[in-house]
Length: 67
Ligand SMILES: [Zn+2]
Image (cartoon, rainbow, N blue to C red; front, side, top):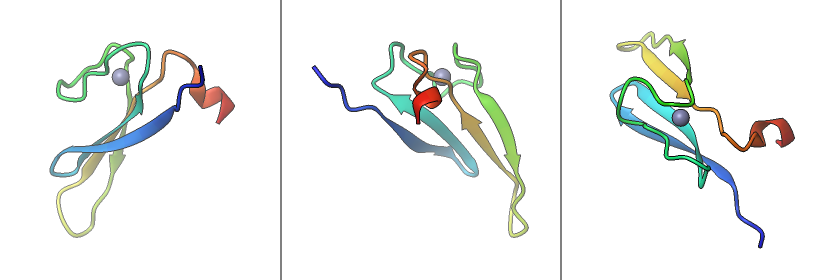
């Protein structure tokens, strides 16, 4: 069986976006400040408003390595 694997950019709050893998081996916590995969958090400066935060989750199946 071939599973379709993709990523989703999920706006959580004003200026806060979580990029997380869909259909991963675990559920990613996109509501709390810390997910079990230890997301990379990047500050995204916004000259027109408050700065944004980009949370990039890691997939447990290692799909980043192939994409
Ligand atoms: Zn995660």
